[in-house]
Length: 316
Image (cartoon, rainbow, N blue to C red; front, side, top):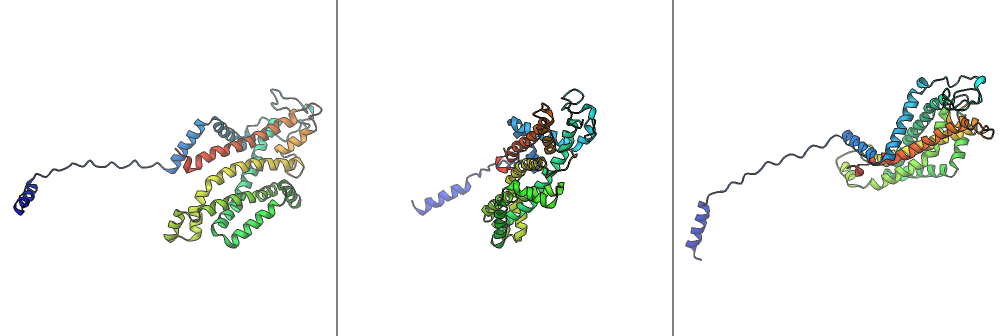
């Protein structure tokens, strides 16, 4: 092809009409809903898809209502004695029967919910503040912090945990505060080890490196990046530990090292009724023990539901 034909071809292309392509504007992606809305939707989904989890949440709500409003909704004074109606079986007047002092067992079981739930929640909050935070710091920083936390956890686990709780309460005195402290101490190794392992895995993650390169301090990264990513598994552990805390408080009360009578408490009531089972007054120990079993059962089932709710990887 000569130069004249090439020039003619270029001129023809230049004279060709320009075709304008109408570009459709790209629609903005729908904005994501807030974190609270996503959690609420996930909660509704988990409860609707898993009836057992829904039952656990309903049972937890029932215990919460009993703990908050129990002293005002019970039909009788839980401390009032009446020897004329002692050891009466369950009836319409006394749904759970009466104990050896004529006290209404239903009122005592409902009122005891506040004390047992308070011990469980307070002890779990304390052990999370001590064991959870120290475990995260040990896993993230390592060094002497890791050595101190790990050796402290090993030292506590060298003792049988319930025996250690008995020794702490016996040494400090059988008060509610000391029961909370003892329960938090025996659960310290569990929280510290779980938090340490999770933080150790995430301390070299990409989002941590990005936060460090952005100029954030190490402690700021610890609380703003590491802690939120460790919280899902810690929340599940907190739910399971609440059941163990209730059982531990009841066990201490059962052997005489817990809450002192006549304060309504599930472990005390089971201990009071244990001697009457042989003589046929089964209701004195049955209903407090059944309530204790349902509380532990509720918290254990609640852990699976909370894992599905708070873990971002499980949200749909």
